[in-house]
Structures are given as C-alpha cells and as structure tokens.
Length: 189
Image (cartoon, rainbow, N blue to C red; front, top):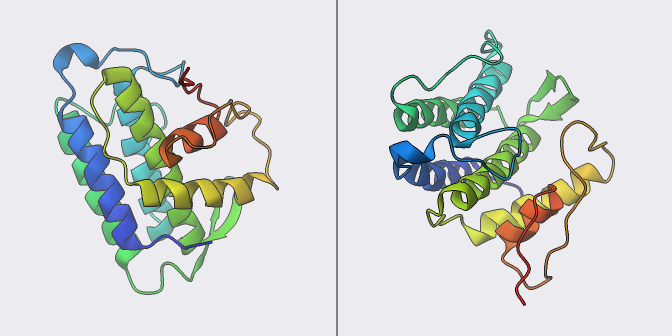
C-alpha cells in the first residue's frame, strides 16, 4: 500500500478548495449525502478537522466543537485551515512521530492518510450536493480506499460511518471510497 505524502495532501486540499470556491450562495443550505449535514456543515466540518489535526500535531488547543468556523468567507476559512494543516504536516519528523487522539495512537503518516480519506470523501459529498464537478485525483482516491479498507478491518464503524453500500467494481475510485464509507452511489443501468 502506498503511503500518502504532504504533496498528496496539498493536491487534495487544492481540488476541494476549488470546489468550495464555486459554491453559490443558494447552495450552502443544500442537503448532502451526510444526511445530518448541509453543504455549509460539511465545509465547517472540513475546517474543524483541519484545525483538530493541527492541534493534535502541534499540541495546541482543540477548536471549539460545534462552533461556526466559516464566518462570512467559507472558502477563505477552508483555504486558511488547509494551509495550516499542510504546514503542520510539513514540519520535520511529523510523519514518523506518534500522536495520541480520541481513537488511539497513530503515526503522523497514518494521521495524514486519515485526513486525506476524510477530505476526499467530503469533497465527493460536496460535489454530489452542489452538482459542481469535483476533480478529485483518482490516484489519491485509490490510495485512500486501500488505506481505509485495511484500517476498518480492525475498527468499528459504529457512530462514525454507515455500512458499505453497493457500487460497481469498475466505478471510479472516489465512488468506491464513498460507497465503502457508507454513502449511496448511483449504480449505472
């Protein structure tokens, strides 16, 4: 299995940021495949998780749960949190070090993989909700899917993800990742 790099994170953040920048004002309250969240909620989650990973790596304070982290500039808030995330993961030794979090200990490299699959899956959610084409990198989605399949072999989905949904074997990797994480993916007739 290929390990994610900071460059992979930069690519994924950029693509999702481009998608977020295209969201029209009337789309922010649209429902998403994450049934409890609308578009704004998903973007707020992405910003919040970026800041959680930065706090975890840097040993700083965690962001306030449930706070609106987007303000009047959701795309700017996302880009800013992504830049902080990339800077944190770029520091020497971060990928080799072990970090303790709510779900246990993991190396920086594993944390990077976790952040990447969450980012890609929610990018897919935003594309589904808005109809904005997501140019999510197929190689990163394939890598994220391989990682999450191994990770979930030994972890419970309860309270985090729904059961895997049916998807065509030949579907793009991003659709297979979304389906594995419990999102319904339209099957082609």
